[in-house]
Image 1 (tube, helix red, strand yellow):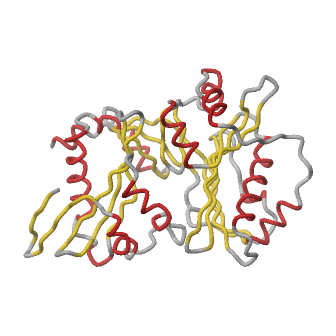
Image 2 (image 1 turned 90 degrees about the vertical axis):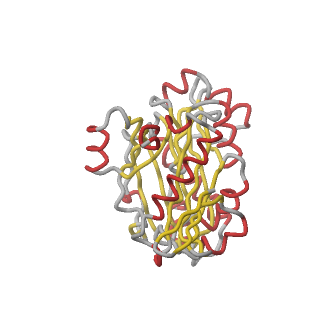
Image 3 (image 1 turned 45 degrees about the vertical axis):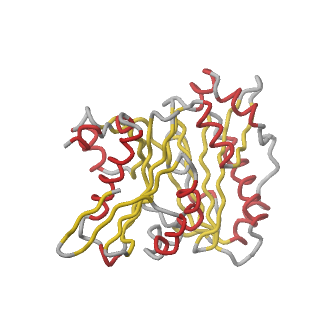
Length: 324
């Protein structure tokens, strides 16, 4: 894709391949024991929506990142950025980002007008959005709860819950699309017109929703008129600390939250029944419905992302930056 030299080093930026897996994983965990790379790497390098890239220094992979083409090829997401500790401080991540973006522009010349990103809320992010209104637009905000909890504590929590009158179901794909694409549902569940799943924001359109349904477990509760009042999107997978549960929740009826949480935790425990396993639990809720660790009574400690209480969903127009 591109080649350059730097103080005698041969630096190459190119598309990542399945055979690069071990070198990419050897860069180390960048999320405190809950990194998704081992679980997701094959998808990053084989799924047609993804474009993944590496930077080599003298034949050794030093940096990695991916992009995902979404919104019917009109928007793009970036992520997975990491640089091996032996090569940090040499701007390789920035070089790789610029080289890979220009490679994607050959196929999608205007796509970086709609670069969608999520970022941990901070004064810096707020200021950047405020001072650069032509480049950054704040789309949405979400609560984050990051906990580390044992499997035995999860079982105790589940067993300690009172019976609930809330009914949860796993919709068919047809029902999921039919209800979620309705204007009334979008106004109620997604007032910002975006659905963020696993830190990836998507517009509410059929192609995105179909991909989400095929990639994740969907759980929802219907109201009296047959439309969803609370929606939970689950992702459960192994990680270094044991296993990780990501729950992206949307809704207007917070009484459904506890029932959905119990159902999702029960699914995770059934998949990983080892009573000694440690679970990394990440729950994302609408900004008006915060959730705290007080929901659990014991054996809970701060998770890897405990410092993050809110994340921002941001639209960025990168065309001017890439043209410079």
